[in-house]
Length: 152
Length: 151
Image 1 (cartoon, one colour):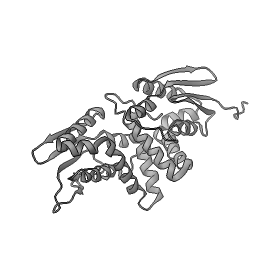
Image 2 (cartoon, helix red, strand yellow; image 1 turned 120 degrees about the vertical axis):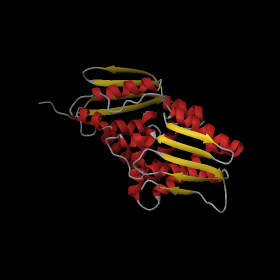
Image 3 (spheres, one colour; image 1 turned 45 degrees about the vertical axis):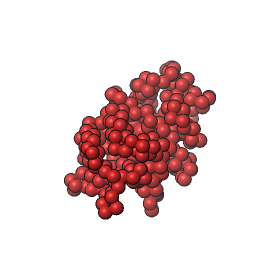
Image 4 (cartoon, rainbow over the protein chains, first blue to last red; image 1 turned 60 degrees about the vertical axis):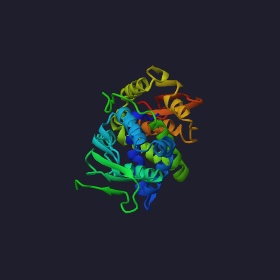
């Protein structure tokens, strides 16, 4: 058994393997993961909206030992990840981190949020910095979701 | 000494993520694909355990098993003799979590144990025998390989 504590280091090896297959193998996997995450999140996000998202990520913050703030406003939810344990573990790893490890997160989060009727501005800041920011708000056809790397 | 020794809360839903990951890789790339990923995990992520095994020392693996099976609340027994380490898992916490999530274990789910143990023993004086004895039960044996000739 891979301990749940160390799943992300295994995940990191899955990303390396899929990336080596070429084509869009990695992106296809993110789409499949996004579909699977619907089981945990989609109904909650659709029925309770931003408050449901705050509840979901609040539980994740505790269980995954994140240093994170999650602030709910009338029109948006802002998540500031000050220390991401997932990238932190991928980096604290004798096998080394997959260089685009961070991409899996917007890869599954954004399609799911859009399916729930929301848009997301996802700032990864930098792929070797275990920090990121997400701003989630109701869908707006004039402002599609986007991924940023503001620190690079 | 363990290379990785997490503390704090547990996110056991990662066992569901593991189920999905092995299903995805196994379905598309077969057991050879899974074998490649678990070989990298066993020999590169858990390099210190693997280096110990290559040197004939299983203490790193035993410490890893004890720490994380305790941390996950597993019902298990571990015996260490001169010839073998045997871990008998009576209630696997990963399978229990899948059941709680309403998930059916992938046909590749147990490969995380079978292929990981296999890769840990590759090129070492040990061999792994992993017997799945029931739903959430298994017996994992790491024993001195009969293929190694003693001078």
